[in-house]
Image (tube, rainbow, N blue to C red):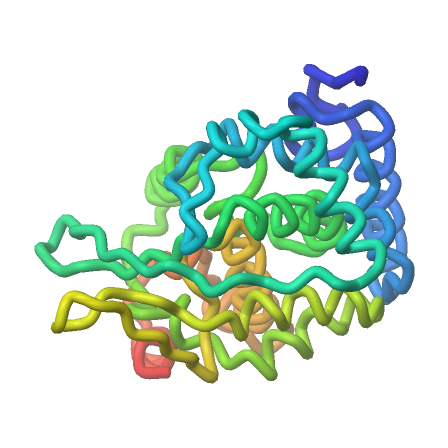
Length: 302
């Protein structure tokens, strides 16, 4: 299968290692979304289980590494099967095509943060990570066409280093008053109904929306105090660790970005500037503004 190793000049997408036809499809989706900001995409599901999409998704998931999910199945085990990863992907393709695919529970582990606290991390099975990645490869171009330049976290060809450079540049031209906010527990607190409404503004394909609902509603399995496992279901949030979660979290906060830059928002009314990296963001101003402090307090509280 031919792959692309160069970045498309027309789009800001990272197409490294993807099949040529998939690169072309992603470029077309991006251009369509960019030209028609109110267009709602209705025929995407069959692109997710295309052979080139699934094979490209598997390669990206494998390159990202990570441990096995709740089923204990590793890449080594998949590739030791009689037909290797090809058979694994063909079976997955069949399940998706026949709409028999079901998401597995998510394994939760806790990793230490720099402040000494523990951060919950959800680990989907490799099977679910591949389908999430395939879905990401199709949805990402659509939402990348919408996302604003102030957003840097978990986006192709953007990084924390770029965000810091933007902040430094603003300080150098006089934006000396800096307000910082970190939405603690953001991933676990996103209202799912509102998130789905955000998705539906661009995607009307019910099969794609159902896939995302399956992942959002997947039970979480973690160790209990007695040495066994406990299974819980939550009514909100998107698990940190899911392949699709960063895109969904950016999508939800995209509407905050739009309010900030809207006609009555701080960008116009207070000459303020926003730099956001996922759920951590900085607002800069040229002088101290009481209304901006109140705005930031409201954001932090909500």
